[in-house]
Amino acid sequence: MADAPKKSKGKLIFKGDKEHKKKKRKRPEAKDQGHEGGGSDEGWVRADELDDLVGPLFITHPSDPPICFTVDDDDRLLAYPIPEQSQTEPLIVNQVFVGARLIGTSNTFTFKSSNGKYLSSDKFGVVSADREAISGLEEWEPTLTEAGFAFKNTHGKFLMADEIAGGGFKIRADSEDVGFCETFRIYCQARFKLKAKRDKKKSKKEGSSTNELENVKRYQSWGGGRLHMSREDKRKLKEAREEGRVAEAMLDRRAKVKSDRYCK
Image (cartoon, rainbow, N blue to C red):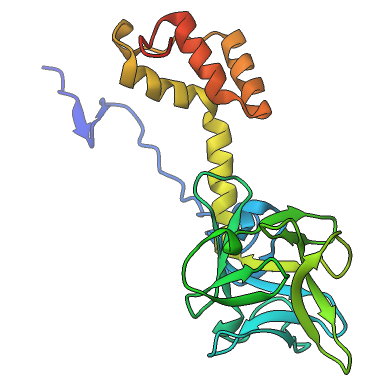
C-alpha cells in the first residue's frame, strides 16, 4: 500500500520530496515614522500657505531687532523683541496664538491668544487682544506674499509693525498698501502642517467621484447605488473643481442622468 501523503502546516509533502531549508532573511531597519513622507512632526516650521494658519501660531516680524506678538496677563498686545536663540519658535505660551478659519469662508481667519481673547482692530487701526467674542472686528483676511503673510482687517486696512520714536515697535492696522512693515513671518507646529498636507493629498486623490458617489447613495432611487461616470465626466468634474464650481457641475450632472429628482 502506498504511503499516504504527509501534511505539514497546510502544505502537502510526498515521499521522496526533498525538504528545502528556509533561508533566514535580514529584516530591514525600521524607518522613523515621524520622518516618513518628508520632515519631522515635531517642533515649529515656517507657514507657507493659508492652511498652515489653522492651529497654534508664532507670529513674528523681520524687523531690527525681530519682534513677535506677545500678550501679557492684562491682555495687552506687545511687540516683543525675539532673542537670537529663539527666532522660529515661542519661548512662552503668551507668544502663541491659535488660528481658525471662519466657518463658511475660505480665507477669513480669527486669531485667539493664550488668554482666550481674540486679536481685533477698530476703524482707527487700533489693534488689541482683549475681545472675548467674534465680530467683524476680529476677522482677518491673510494674503500670501513672497516674504510671508499680510493681514487685512474688516475695514480694508493692513496690519503693520510700526517703529516708534525712541526705539521699539507698535502693532497697528491702518496701512493702505503691503510692504516690508506689513509682511509677517508665521511659524506653525509641524504636526499640524503635515496633517493638513495629508488631508489635502487624500482629498485630491479621492476627487469628485467620491463626492458624487455619496450623493448617488443618498438620493438615487434606481441602479442600486451604482456610479455611472465616464472618462469625459471625470474630466469635466476635475475642471469644475479647479475653477471652483464643482457643486454646480455635480448638480448639472445629476439632472442629466436623472439620479436626483430634487435637483431640477
